[in-house]
Each structure stands twice: as C-alpha cells, then as structure tokens.
Length: 269
View 1: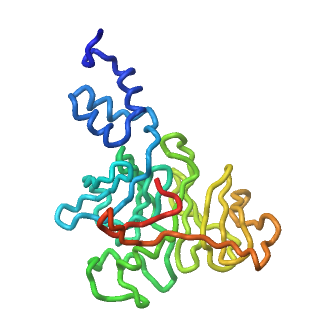
View 2: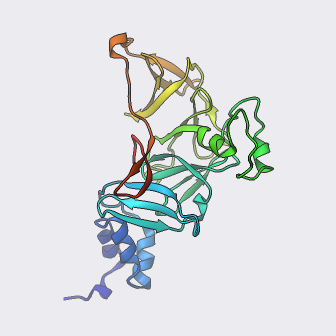
View 3: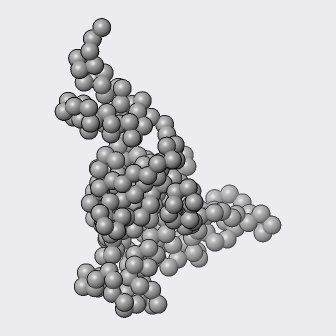
C-alpha cells in the first residue's frame, strides 16, 4: 500500500474537494508539497454551512469569522480588508468598501481580488476626493453622517451573477446611494454603469436564471435589460396592495453563542 507521501498531486487535489475550509488549511500545513497543492484550489470546496463575518480584532486587525458547523471562531489575517466595511457577499466573495469610497471584490480564503472602480457619487453635494484628506476618525459630519456612516451607506447591497472562479465574464450589481440606484460592473470596465428607468427607492436585487431582478419600495417587479442601453423594465402584472412584497434584509444582532454582533444577510456565502 502506497504511503500518503507518495500520492500524486492530481489525487491530492481531488482529495481537497472533499474538505471543508478548516480541514483544507490543516491539509496545507502537513508538508511543503501539500501546501502547494492546497493553494491550487482547482476544485470547488465541499458543501458546508456558511461562515459569519464578524468585525476586526482591534489589536491585530485580523478579520474574525465564526464557523456555524464547528461553533468556533477563526481569526484570519486579510490585509486587504483592513478598515473596510463588508457591504455584500455572493458566491463566497466579499464586497468591501473603504473610507475613500473605493471597493474591492475578494475571496477571503483564496485571496483572489478584483479592484473595483470608484463607486458612483453618493450625492452631487459630496466631493469624493474629500475622503482622501480626512482621517476616518474625524468628527466632522456630512449631512449629519460621520465618514464611517457614509462608508456604510454608499452601497446598500452587492451581488454577483456568477462565481468569478467559474466564469470570467461575471457581472457585479450594486444598489447604491440615497435611492439605492442599481449599477453594474464587469471585469475590464473602467467605471460603474448606472441602470436607467428607476422609479423611487429600490429595496432589493437578486439574480435568477440569467437575469437581475430589482424590487422597489412598492408593488412592482423590474428586470434589468442590458441592451441596447441598460434600463429597468417592468415584468409581470402589478401585485395587489393586499399582497405587497416584503422581506427581511441585513441587520445586526448580538448572538449569545457567537459572543459578538453579527450581520445576518439573505445571501450568505
């Protein structure tokens, strides 16, 4: 019987497809060769419960996670997330915004990362370069909000059409600004493209069967048409007032088991 050390890399890679993320990390710690194999990540991870994303540790600035399956905390050094607010999660990737209102799309475990273009202006009255000159703990307020609050409010929700590891032609869609305006970005784009046709504030956006659907604060549903010019189009009959769509969205709660505030979201990774 062959020793574990004699297993070929293709077999070792296949073994990693049955491992949860913590076991994947333990696998990579066995030896140098296994560490190299663990970093290839050519196979999707084994099905597992989502992790909760917690705040940074104040002293180490490591990002804290909570494994529901293990009932255990993990602190992971992810410099790209230092000082950033997590505004969305999709297909295992995180959308994160910093105090300068710039964003990244990052897989916290593989460390693959996309630099996102500057988000569309929050308001014509606000000069985005101002954030580059003011420290994050500045007590000055804009329109009654601190800079940290602005960082949180700039993107209401962010989702992906596909996993970037599986398809390079994915689309990222956000709801941003005071009216949660829809806008999208694709790899190679130099800026976000705003979707026209918005009526009122938007409450939610989902991706289903190759389409983005937007739910406003009302009783109608819209689909995003990308051609010839991106715009919202009403779909289906109007929903009766007595059947108005409602939902729960992200909210912060204190979980006694986790021991810290956590964010619950409708699309956990």
